[in-house]
Length: 74
Image (cartoon, rainbow, N blue to C red):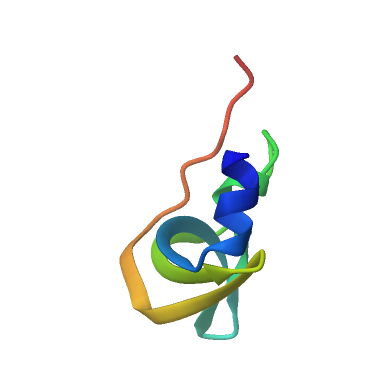
């Protein structure tokens, strides 16, 4: 039930995304949640995201841009 409410009701959330350098710019690759252990990227940051009907729309600029922190197998 909670999953359906999150899909149907519009809401704001903050998501951590990973970044890759293309030329002299950083581009969003995917959510940090989708990164597998062993993958390496150039950076990461937080984004405010408006989510509705399971579609996400970034809002505003990146927050806390920093170097990438790789995941490790436990």
